[in-house]
Image (cartoon, rainbow, N blue to C red; front, side, top):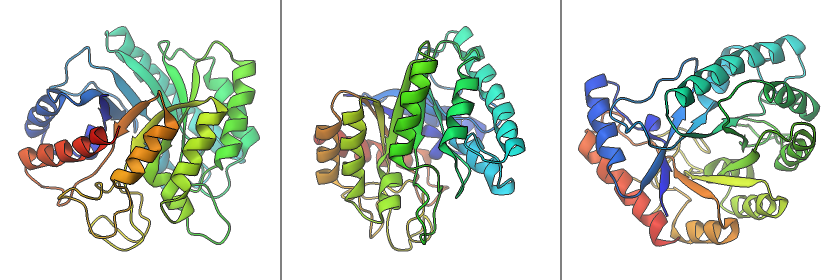
Length: 299
């Protein structure tokens, strides 16, 4: 098994250092592809082989816009906010299609049911059907589940519940069968929603049973403050048992093993951020190697 690495969560800010880091990362035997983040533009990372598979996540742009525009989102009940998100997503589609035309094997794009705290499933379905009519270069379109809005609980993302997103996928797949739809889970984001290590496995079993599960990202989180942020921060903590993991990190070998056993034949990703952020590149690569080794040892 190989992993998609979310290199953009870890790579250096300096462009020359970043190229060396990406080159070193993509030479690792455990790396089967990259996850690329789309904010408002998308370039192929310098240092990455042109034929390396990639998944594109729209979460950087979704959360970035939603932070300053509370109505922005593909599931927004505010029509103007939904249209702003659709216009942004059109730019994402064009950027992805351009990379595909250049010969880069983009596997899928991850879409999200923003905005925080007021996402509407019917509006999300409407948006996905509109996006299905765009040229994405033939890639799959996946919905990534983030922590759902729970009354009385402070959310990180606060999007739709998993069963709502599955229902949306059932609907849009009937009306836009030309698209290869799918569902993505991130271990930490489910743990943040459930405030503990139990809900991620429940989500994996539900998603697998639905037939829509395509990909799982391995990130950890903690219910206590850490150098990554406050309790339940969605900041991609390293896994328990690795040198980079802080006290309180929840995702360890047992959870990885149970997750993979329940998920089965899907793709997997490693999505961790490291502290300090200015950690030297060779140390970052060693830390990623250790996290990847823990996952592979329990696959």
